[in-house]
Image (cartoon, rainbow, N blue to C red; front, side):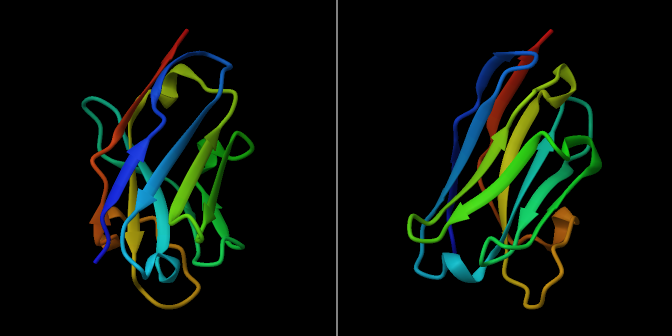
Length: 126
């Protein structure tokens, strides 16, 4: 089992940057695929990015490609989401999640991630 705690959210102007962190408890963090999701008011939770156990393989939703970067530091049990050139439509609560499934596929389906953090608010003003 793993517990996840996000941090780093806040208010930023359009074009600005934020780096989200997700600290995980437990000794098996490196065995989990990790993902970031977001949920805006009145909308469903949507996939943002995912990274495999080693950090080599990543996957992004089209709307953040070239602006967001997911990475992980297994020595610190932490996964990051660097967000650059933020847009008002990026405003949402951002969640990190852990997927214990085996294999190379990085899933975008929230239902397949077993563990979730409490979320951190990101607000981008125009």
